[in-house]
Image 1: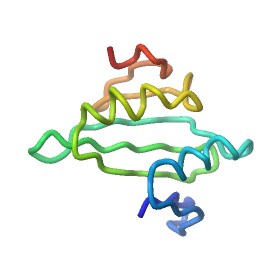
Image 2: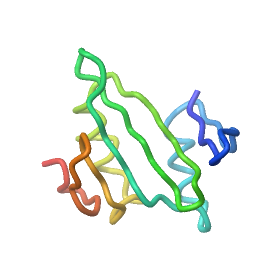
Image 3: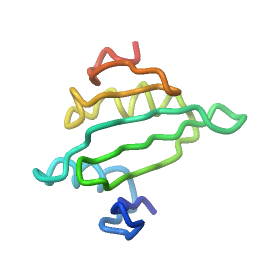
Length: 101
């Protein structure tokens, strides 16, 4: 289950998959993403995606593969283009389709 949490830790949106979170971001004009972080986690090449919204809301999801997270999930997420992105704590600038090439 994917959830977006408010700044107090309460669930404000649920989704069975990433599509629901993508829909939330595209529909919400007052709650927009301001920071994205993609990090390596675990010993098996896993990835963690964290998104922070202007309201203080947040979203996190683990991917079985860091490469899938960066090369496919984020690269084609046009609603997030321009949002500041960091990878393992290193600032990569605004997200574009070329960020992870």
